[in-house]
Length: 168
Image (tube, rainbow, N blue to C red; front, side, top):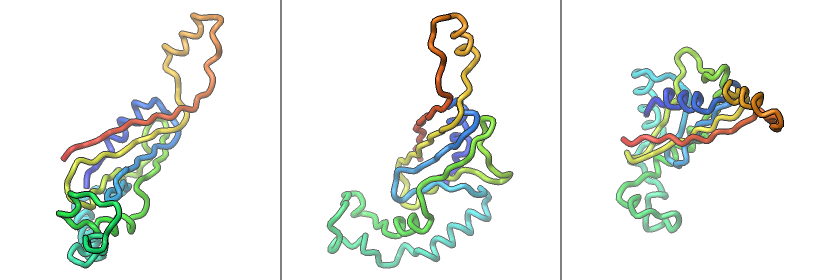
């Protein structure tokens, strides 16, 4: 589990969006993004709960190479990850949407944006998209005054797709 709150807040700041919504998404089937507390005791409790609910040593048809014929990746044949897919399904969607107000994520006092890897360690990424009202910097607003025939700047709705990644 990795706390990605600072990286997500940086993406919000870089987007220029002052008020809107920030979507943080994992494009991996055995990873997810959650908002919760990043506290050692909770993290240990949560990991233990997941292991009890979805033990890695159970039989999973997903890992039975005599039965499985779809979506085969050779590296997966060395490591069973049926339990990881089941955990991801129990945790729900692969992302979170967080309100943005005055250019800041609207998180509670102890809330953090967490990236959960439910499978083995490997390179993973998450996507951040910020949508909302964008305030033009003064330099852009003043530019229109210098060009009298310029078209008015239309629309203050802007979407920014910033891809951030980390390597373990």
